[in-house]
Image 1: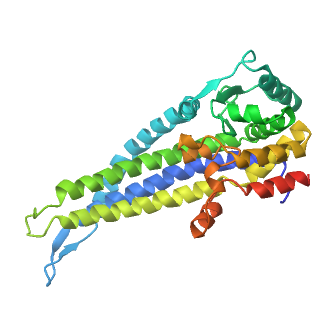
Image 2 (image 1 turned 120 degrees about the vertical axis):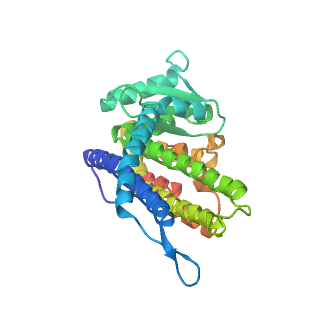
Image 3 (image 1 turned 180 degrees about the horizontal axis):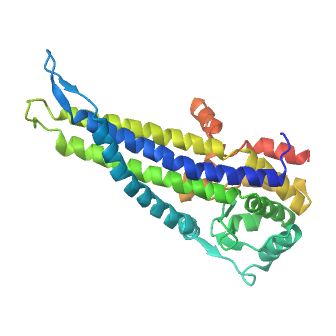
Length: 336
């Protein structure tokens, strides 16, 4: 793996965060323009050809007016949605994983390990959360010093010794130092907006089929099923845009971040073999599968679903996975 300095990685992640912040509105406005253009085209007709088909056309002046009237409201709505989700991400993740805050008196062992590692690398002490799960996993989250959090499972605390636990926590602290968590939270919020829009769109298509199809006919005798086809085409276009954005997000969240976090964790704990041993244990029994949120699973030290499955489906899953192969991570740590 090509060496990348920590400051270079920080700049890269900050740049990618800005790309996502700028790119998402552009993609959204592009989808809005296509939607309005399709509606505009199919609502304007200059008559019928010799076969009885409507000759539609695009009224560019009306399209421009519609777009300029609607676009600001869409951007304001998405901006409000993003701000709420962005700054409420900590409570949302905690609620989804059922994590509870951990104080020093609750578990001095874990708290002292986190405190010692943060002092060693000169970073503020993050919040420490624990999930009551007998399986093993951990992740870091947050967008700033007030919200940075390291979350571990009870299974992880029970199964790992102090050196292994220090390696895992060092890995998660490196994610925070490299600004990986901020990039992940940004992508999670945007993908969440896309998912919500897609859900609404699917419901509209379903309702159109259920109530709008029927045998009703328009004034020119043509079946209103044409309108349903138009809605379906618009839905497919939006789905393609959403799929493209999801792939773009996955590529932006490079798998190198996990290798860099492994290197940082090994350096912090001073024992690469301990982190390798911890990854081996976690891969045998990865926890937090019951959360059922793949966006949150992107933050786990090992993605539970990336470990199982064979064949072409698993091949593509690995190709677009945000986590590298665990065996390769262990091999590199053992050669550190």
